[in-house]
Length: 430
Image (tube, rainbow, N blue to C red; front, side):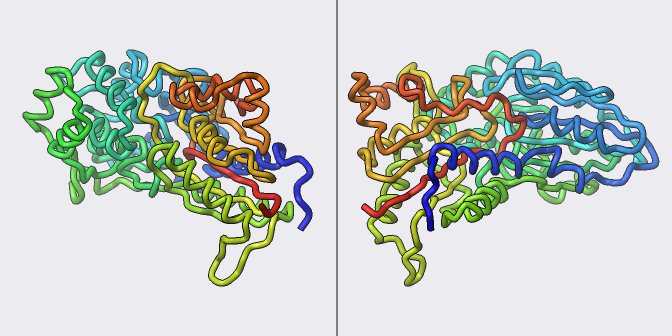
């Protein structure tokens, strides 16, 4: 098979294909429910919430009102559904006020009414309505600690649900007896509705005890108000079988796997063999990079087999999921740029291997880039400019490295989110 002449552009085209497969305008309309006899109220939260609300407006027949909250910079102009912007990943007063209004808007409904809930990645931080007795500042402080310690999204959201007045099924419980339909874009490994956005409309299997255990695992001492709340364990989240959630329906409209499949299809059309390693890869970004580098080197040496078959080059390895970074320094960067930097160091300028890692929401960590790219001469170019890549990785400064090399991927807000996207192109045998 002929190799792509422009590997950078090829990898970016695969990322664009994954984003297109997750675009609310494309994936949401087929899943809209029929209008009810009574009122239709739209609520929602997440990085895709505004784009989802606009799509609902464009395709809904009948009266509709509502409110959704999205990340700053991710808003879209709507006519009938109000869009509020708030802070992510650490919540702010705007998110708290929006969540409070959303909860108020869905109370007092009847069986003839419908609540259409639009959930996507980021909803946990954006629906920031602390449980009684907990201040927003206390919740912000704990969130900051959890983000820095390397906790998984499952652990983070298990804690969040037990500090919230709206997440963990509480929103759906407030809607009853009206019907609620949730349209969701998954950003979590495994696509568990109870984890996506901390599951505001589905039963919650986690417990106060688990939330306490997670904080103990990472040696986190929470603010006193949170410690008292978790210890008292009053008003547990709605559990499976709760009658208040009997009228709730949940539909996944976009997933990480579907995005990877779209990228694989795009690669195949360009004559490149795609191998999807998985859509739920977790763990430290640096360790994941070492594993990916090892697989890429095996492919380049002809040591990678599917059954008894050695796949032909060129080949692209695709993967998704959500890695983590245990932050030890006040550097600039995110998990995807950290992955790419560790990948570059592990590959050691291996011939014919290129890689890209990006967050599909368009923002990787603390900066405005989606991710970064590595080429066979990354280390050589860095050495020529006097850039110490090992030191920058150790200092959590991956953004600084790729900014200097002009290898950042910048998309701006994508207004969708199916988590991390990684593609490693192998062109030649080692």
